[in-house]
Amino acid sequence: MELEQVKALLPDSVITIAELIGFPATAELLRVLGGTTFPVGKGLRAMGAGRAKLLKETIGEENARLMTAHFGGEVLYLPRCDRALRELRNRAFLGEFENLKNSGLSTPRIMTQLCPKYGFSDRFAWGIISQSKNDSGFNQDSLF
Image 1 (cartoon, rainbow, N blue to C red):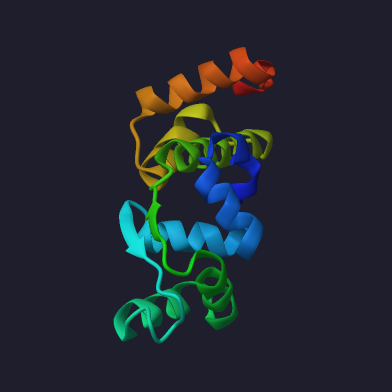
Image 2: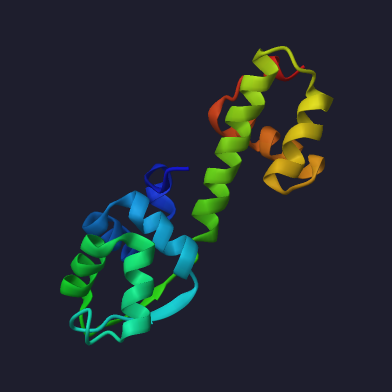
């Protein structure tokens, strides 16, 4: 899932980080550290061995260096970005739903297969499909 696709749902602080280290590294940073306050030292050594190691393991040494150079001495809140991540999940579900439907699988079979995979009920899935039809012209004729 590509975080850049939902850029409009991200807070400015996350956009700044993504512009610095890229969206894939930012997505991994949020996956691992989202929802935490992360003090960024003025250098990787000043940050503390544990936090520096975690940052390097999460986004790589070069990206950790870039973060330290840019945010050194600041305390960053790394939001979870739940809304953006849910939107990405829902888009992935819709794409997979449409692909399976186009391959000839029945709608009940698709729901049985995809709902557990995406972690939601079939009622919720129908809501996503309905909302998508209203928002973006999802091909509703292909659903039945």
